[in-house]
Image 1 (cartoon, rainbow, N blue to C red):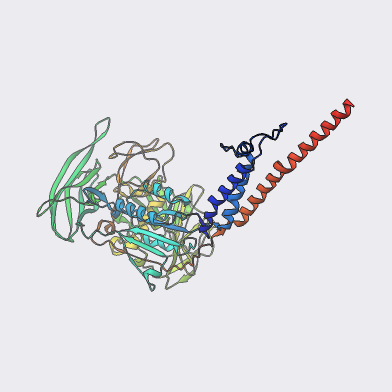
Image 2: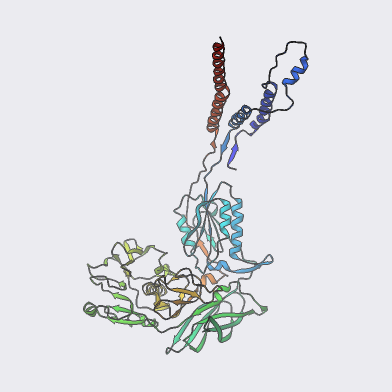
Length: 630
């Protein structure tokens, strides 16, 4: 409770004080005195008349009643318990939290159960607690006001939902290690906590893990799709299927082609094939000689197990989209190494051009429609008028300079919010040394070692620029996955449309679009354009830009750690020591004394001074009247 009493037995004085005050006014209340000519009247009657049967208290009675309450409250030690405790409630909203199971007579997702646990936790907190609500993916984000009442927090829970997002719980919790204003951090997730050197009971983190041991957690997922083409009209579509489970499953993979009926886009079945998967197996299914003039939707259907029908708990990863188009964007490589030497010809959906350093200095970028340029171990005297990636810039002058070489470079900081670093496994990043870079002030540090930044990024004059202090190439794909993801992210940021020939990952922003462009999800029930150019939900999107032909962008979300419901994973709880001492109860005796003093002054003014003043005026008036008659 926000208020309390140090000496609650003092409240027994209230009925006694009120009774005494009422008795005093009834016994000694002011009555109209009548003077009679004889004393032979009923003495008893006069006494009874002074003790009126119906009590009509005057205004002064209520004033003195308030004074009595103020004095008794002060004597009882009335205080306000304003502890000021501030806690944080963190909910995991990654894709695995959308897994559904039949529980308690209804289908409920993990996130539904997380909300139930969150409400139970909120109900257990003291009513004076201030709460901040957070979700963790794609980055730690606060929901609502920084300090909410418990009732407001429960209402906000209804607004939360799961997205097509990878888990960012570890990164989110690490940020709380440096936020001492929270006395306790409550976490609700399907991940299991790993406590470091300290005991869980001594940590300021409180973890609530969702227990799914009673439900089947097998899951089939589309883990990859790709197209290989020999010409621009037909190609082979390959899909990878993975079974995360303990029991064999079978089903059908359907490939549907999008057809424009004039008024809308509809799908028709192009191919289908049955499959069977053993526990833990990944299988590739290839559909040959498909027309590349249309985009496709892939979907797993008719799923079953040996005992009969089976319902996949995570249906969101059973659908994927893919769209092929002729490469219309080109990227120019400037330097000694050619695109083939850099391994870039593996990315066949981009047209690659090559210029030597001398050719660039003589003629510049002459290729029309070039989306970006890669300056390999070369930095021009001035920034080019195009999006550019500067790889290992050489020279002591120029807009970007390589400074100190760090042979054993170990990462110390990175900006997880920049799309350049999305889905990069930093523990697998092998750089073989790196140069510390120095660039203009408008370029931000995206990746750093102890000695300084090794990756810089920024925008200037409507163009985007990237600087890398280590070599990204040759591009080898899965043989160097961390470097390959960095390279693809760099191309996607510098030339956003260069990625669209196959698909992009959910969360990609189409930065090349302006306010007159429209982006419409074809499989969305509402069929309305998206609110922004950031594509958060997997779908096939129709992009219309003024002056250009309509184009398709396929958006998917593939993440084995989210699809694998058997291994919910773990999160390392960071060390965090916060010594929270609740403030002492605030006694209100001083304020009550001020209230009593004000009431006494009012009583003195209205019922002592004011009657005396009026009585004096009447006496003076009567004296004047008598003097006038004389």
